[in-house]
Length: 61
Image (cartoon, rainbow, N blue to C red; front, side):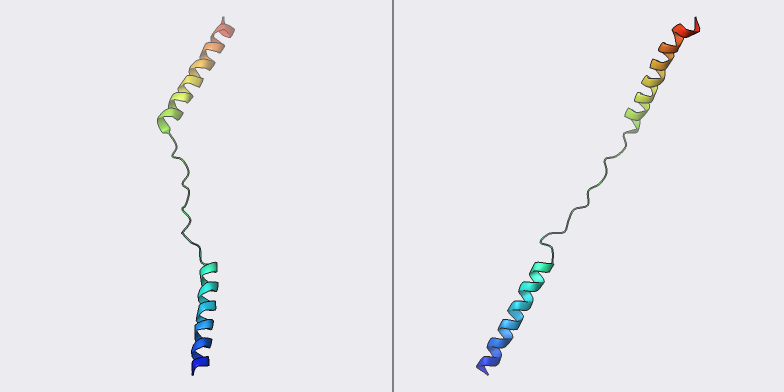
């Protein structure tokens, strides 16, 4: 009976150690992509348009 108890403890201990190694310690956090800044994009687009208008103005003369 004593040998059976020792065997059961050994099997359960081995099983729990293997199980602990295969499961991750903490769930991995999902990295979110940065949000698109619509206002900054709109401003940059307007600046680019303004800049191209300035460079094209001397050509028209």
